[in-house]
Length: 272
Image (cartoon, rainbow, N blue to C red; front, side, top):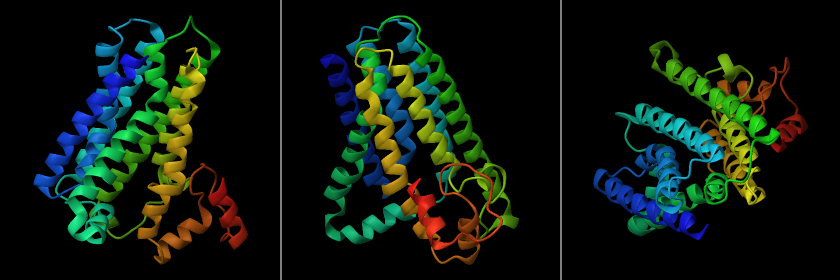
């Protein structure tokens, strides 16, 4: 097991240092977002090749394919979305706040922290690579279906948003159609769901339960830290968004409310 995690750590360290140099040269730290998904592919596939001798156990292969499918699609999508737009508003905010310390704080708080997050979230896959377990279990099937559902939900939500933004008639508007009619963040809901699926597949490993850290971490980040809170703060006070927010769940998909939510209802929705 040690060789698997050491391989992943070394590869992620090299990748994050490389991305730090790229971001520094380009003056754009948000380029790290493009590398986020592919970093999982690098860490997991590299750990399999270097640390596990390319074991052909079915559970390892299933998770490696899942990670490649998710990570490469996400990287391509974010790269396409980022093209020609410059540094994302969140990273511009950090750059302004950090002032003269921006270089070393970017390295530590953006790049190395991102690498650490990747390592933690990828834990179910790395644990399976280290100790794949026995034959098929019902959790493999359930986890596979949950991954496919979450992956599809995220990919469709991303595609709908990209198509919406590319229409000049929608400039300045808030998307409220497709999956976005039922949740304000279908991509985040899909992301969280697919990691629960990966965790369930990983349960087949004797070390699998330790992978619970993955979906719990991604859920916390999306709901409380860098996902929904940071993004929605950007639209705070926008009348169109406030109306949308009053009738649409933040995370879990559900039918739109027919009347504005009360303060207590809104609070309960955020807690779910």
